[in-house]
Image 1 (cartoon, helix red, strand yellow):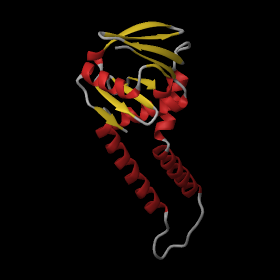
Image 2 (image 1 turned 45 degrees about the vertical axis):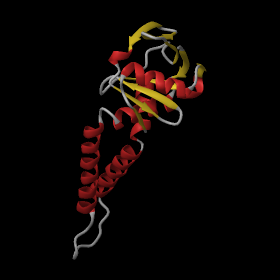
Image 3 (image 1 turned 180 degrees about the horizontal axis):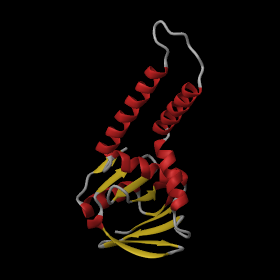
Length: 173
C-alpha cells in the first residue's frame, strides 16, 4: 500500500505542529509553564492594585506592569501561533513544500532542498487534527502531513497503515 501527501509548511501548519508538540511530548512542561504564567499574572495584578486605604496613582511602574501582564496573557493565548511564526522564520530555504510518499518499509520526503528517507521506528507519537497528521519525534522535532494534500490513498486507510507500521495509537488534538 502506498500513500502520497503534498504538504505546505506555512504558518498555519507550523502552528498546528507546535500545538501537537505542546499536547504530546511537551505536555508536562507546558502545563507547568502555564500554571507559572497564570500565577505571575495574578501576582502582578494584585501587586499593582492600590491598598484598601490608598489612593490610585498612575505611575510608570503601573503602566509597565500592566503592559507585561497584557503581553503575558497574549503569549499564553496565542502560544502556538507565536511558535509557528518563529518556526516559519527559522525554516531552511526550499523546505516550505514537501511531497511525501509512504511505502511499506520507509517513507520518503522530497523538498526543493533534497530528498530524505525516514523509518517508521523513529516516530515517537502520532497526532491528528481536522486538517493534519503530525508525527512527533522528540520535544523539538515533528513532521506535518496535510489531509487535504493527500494525492494518493485515503485518510482512513492511512490511519490504519501508520498505526500498523508504528504500533502507536493516534492522538486526536
